[in-house]
Length: 378
Image (tube, rainbow, N blue to C red):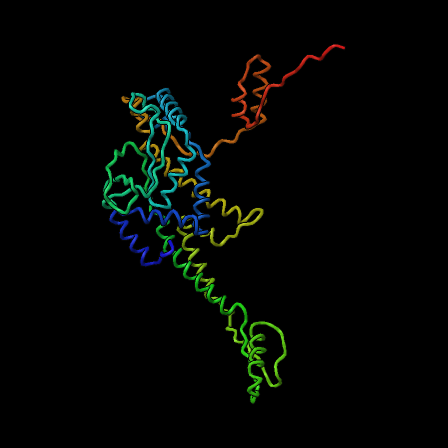
């Protein structure tokens, strides 16, 4: 990272086209933590999708093929619900696969609950870091690079054991913009260092006695450095400041930032023109922009899971049936806590015992039974 410049970035891009991905992916990872604009876009986009949940749904009955019925569709939806329920890292899974939007691809390995047996339950989706992947070209099959070395020779994989998501990488554009912004800021810092504190030139009077020159020079130096003091008669001081009314750096940095925001929000320019704030108006525009992005990202990720996860689960459990259900990433439904508590009270009054764990899950309250002791008689 310390020696990173545009020629080096171009070399990394050229290597990546031939499948040597490890170094570029490491640069991407570091840059995402150092580039404030990219960090903010990444955080917002991932949070928009990460808060959603996998929800199994049946297809529209009007689209049922001949011989299919709602009962079959409900059975498939229930099967998918159980399959996703067995995964122990669903939230991390969504966050990890979202990295494809920034780094170009993401691989999730399917980890089985009881490997080597007939039990095909998948209980974990292990994220494999991007620098462990390579391929001969952008059209070749993925190979695993265990040493994360700069090579395009790896071990072939069984693609069916992975969920693989590929997207045009935002980090590719961000890297070039980041290097240019850093160069611009470096020049800006140098400009501020030179002209930030107004320099002064002291013009000494003529015919200074030789024995007084050092004394006069010291007084002039102190004045020029912003100090205070007296100058000999006939001296004068002039500002050597440059005209700083025209700021050539800020417009350039703003333009670089705008290009990244434009790409990172899929062209939603309201993110550039509407400042955030308290209350309605611009703040709502920002929220609406990221909500729209979240819907789009969730739909694309849902399609990946439908093709690479749902289809496998349904083929294993319903080999002779058409696909009648699928899973979508959807916003969690808000629970009416008061309504739930009322239902719990009704069931309790009817003589039913509800486990505390289920009450906590539905309401979010930590509950424990009240222990009543008998009052001692005097």
